[in-house]
Image (cartoon, rainbow, N blue to C red; front, side, top):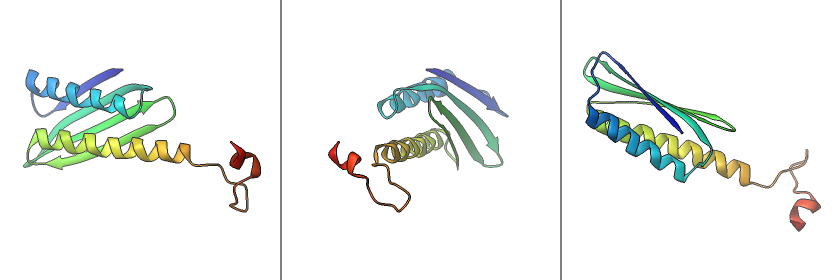
Length: 110
């Protein structure tokens, strides 16, 4: 898994980089096939904005959060990505439906 951190209008410290890496590794608990996570940290007025793009084998997840505290914004963006990944996994686990919306007999036997 590749973790990329970009900063706009601010200098990232080692503490922020380590915090982002630690939080990003938590996402592997929900999806093992994450190929790349790109974080963009920026300051817009009084708010710190964190944007994250998570690429997996099947989908791409995007989350953006604005908060006055950079660490809180990182936490919130990771939470959003977790919710999106879990929702996607639940969709994949649901049984397939035919055109009328009924479960087919073959799927019920499995």
